Image 1 (cartoon, rainbow, N blue to C red):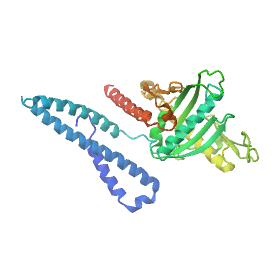
Image 2: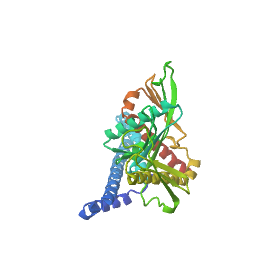
Image 3: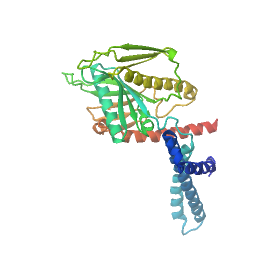
Length: 359
């Protein structure tokens, strides 16, 4: 199969994985077993695509042989065109699957939502986005844990940080990073005028200790009394924790738990992920100069989506996709958008590979 890497190393690796996964001792280390199983599924898909492509290639050869037959030429030509198109599609998919996998795949995902422009309506919208993601996570059988929240007086959030735990969480949620814009009549608007407000969403893979090494001497940790709208147990103990990473200037505040230790652990989880993101952004800087990702860079300043309530319309500006299933989307049905984003992301990677070959 021309223009494709040699498939034999994948077959050899697949046989090795089959052998390792058949050994009981492999499953004594849950993390290693999970990584091997994930790699096994990926290579199995590669081999299935390769076998399918080989079968289509054989059928194309048979059609070519029939093109000179007057009685079969017309039918063979139609079949040839169909098979050729299918051959291209499978070749592209196979090439993508053979690329080194995203190192963040399989990781838990931290999402930070912050109210932007628009005052109280922006914080209400931030709450709507959190509930939308929470419902989507439930539909995917993922778990959600709040790490930090700053509740606004109107019941929304000035800021909320939470972690989604699930096998495909990063692969699906990474596309949500950016500025989300809402157009609607706020509940506080007496004149019935439509307002435009925004909230920003940042999506980060949960960083592991082995990926980000933090020197304790680089941290400035402050303990303070939690602030909030009030209620039993609030402002009675010094349990809130603020951690500042001095070299980077990154600061994290957590006051969700009554336990100082739990707040510190949650704050460190967020800090590690932000430092990992900063490291990745620096490493990708050169690539970003030569490539423009069609699906978007994930830059927080990038307006990615508009939610227009009067027209029940949702528009993703990165892919020029519009749907009138706004209510369904807000109830957690995000697959109609995410599936298209994944397809466009694959197209972008194929184009990037073509660019590499021409250099």
